[in-house]
Amino acid sequence: MRYMATYDLMESFRNTNQWLGASASALASYPIFSLVPNPALHWMAAWGDVTERTFQRMVARPDWGIRTHTCADGRDHLVNIETVVEKPFGNLIHFNVAGREPNPRRVLLVAPMSGHYATLLRSTVKSLMVDCEVYITDWHNARDIPVSEGKFDIEDYTLYLVDFMRKLGPDTHVIAVCQPAPLALAATAYLAEQDPEAQPRSLTLIGGPIDPDAAATDVTDFGRRVTMGQLEEMMIQRVGFKYKGAGRMVYPGLLQLASFMSMNAERHSNAFRDQIMRVMQDEAGDHDPHNRFYDEYLAVMDMTSEFYLSTVERIFKEREIAKNEFVVDGHKVDIGKITTVAVKTVEGENDDISAPGQCVAALDLCTGLPDEKKAQHVEPGAGHYGIFAGSSWRNNIRPLVLEFIDANSGGKSGGKSSKPANKNAAA
Image (cartoon, rainbow, N blue to C red):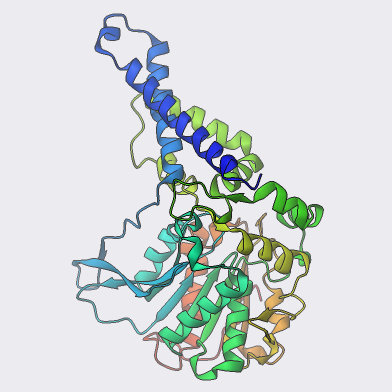
């Protein structure tokens, strides 16, 4: 499958379905058909609208959609999205609220590179902007990065995080969501050895696979069943001539989206069937719950082949982070060297991606960190998405994270607490 023709075949399939949807919608909308009302034509138009939108947004990068923020003065302030550090494979961006004094809580939100854009954390960003100065890693679509820019694997990802942390300085609080949790832990340990003055004040790891073998899921089972040779043969393709990254070996976003949807095929098919009926009955809108969710869910990006394969091999199969054997740029990282950065883990009781036990393993690896600087939380009834973007995050987890940040800010957070790291009831 490692050919441009295969990559272009998937894009052709997507493009064809988008065209079929647009054609069906246009055909069913001919004025002449209104002379003979027919439910089949209404269904055809609705099917066309939903199908066109579905396949069109697979190649569209979602907008952040964060334009204003209501501050304590009761006024809406413009939000300027500024690039702080620009790199070939990802930028560090800042949500600067115009006219607001910089918030003393400086947060670096590390977005996952797992097939979706950083905009997947839009609601997380908006909720943190109320009380924090928010920065986030904005990873680029590999298909748009020329081959001349070189490779990008998990070691490069870790070094990007190191550079971002150095740029923001030691008064930063890092929150890593899902996939980057083990690499954020490694980046912090790397700084602890190489540049202690640049270490963040706290590190919060949310639903990440620190030790994938601590609790089995479909994701970890897949990693065990399939060999690296099979993965490379089945999953890796070469970007076609249509994009700037022509010739780059990638794990295509469309292929990963197919895997995502196959895990819950019945639920997704029911959702689209119901949406077609809502469009027929004029009950749908651009910003209804279905479109808000799928506009983000279906917008996928390619990952470099070396990043995808090294993640599977080194994080899931070899468990280099879990064994404290991770090497970055020839340097063996010792997580036990973290002695001053407070570490908190957050897990969801019903998380079927990174099950409870996988993330909290980070605390055992931090052998040089005092117990008072360790904290953990397991959110009852929460799934993977809920622990960073759902009601569980808004109502329960976010307040705990802010409390943890304040407890480890050295009196600079602006919050009421300056005590050591919290140990909540789930610890």
